[in-house]
Structures are given as C-alpha cells and as structure tokens.
Amino acid sequence: MFKSEEKYNVIILKFDKNLVGGPEAAKFHDFLDSSINDDKTNFVLDMSGVKFVNSTGIGIIVRGFQTIKNAGGEMKLAGLSTKIKGVLSITKLTSVFSIYDTVSDAAADF
Image (tube, rainbow, N blue to C red):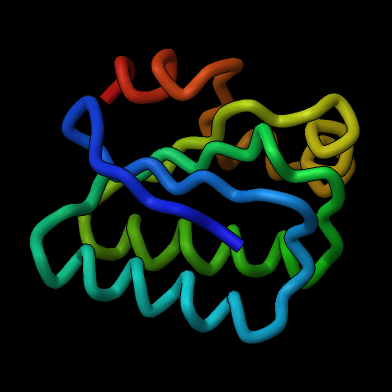
C-alpha cells in the first residue's frame, strides 16, 4: 500500500495502486502512531501512484490527517491525479487538505 522515507525533514509516504481500505489501513495508522511516538509529525502523502480511491480510502486519509493534527503535526498531499482531485473536490476536502503538485513542493512548505 505504501512505502516510507524520511526526506526534507518530513516523512514521505508513497502510496501505490488503489486506496480502498483493508488490512493496509491498520498498517498505515500503526505507522503514523509509531512515527508520532518518535516525535515525527510532518508528513507528505505522495499519491502519484494511486489510480483509484473509494470512500474507505478517503476515510483512511481523513483519519490520518486528524491523528497527525491532534499530535501537533501536518499532513500534505502531493501528486494527485485529476480524478482523485475531483473526488476530493466533490467531498469538499480540497478545503481541508493542503494539496501540491510535487512532493518537493509540499515538503518545502513546512
């Protein structure tokens, strides 16, 4: 579901394929909790590899956003396809998330 790396003083999570929930959701939230416990609270979600997201996938992102925000951190989205930007727009989430064309643009805005 995702790969992680620390770069630009933030944790970059690169998602691939579809974001639709399942056991990967628990792994994502466990990873966030572990990172927050290690005082790492700034994240960029690289969505450039995501082809499809459903309502469960949106829920995963929203829950992650709230977890990070509650820990005093920030989560930014990068590399969204036109289709996924459209889904976020329909759900009015474009006003909630900071969205960038590239990971480096998102990381530079911390």
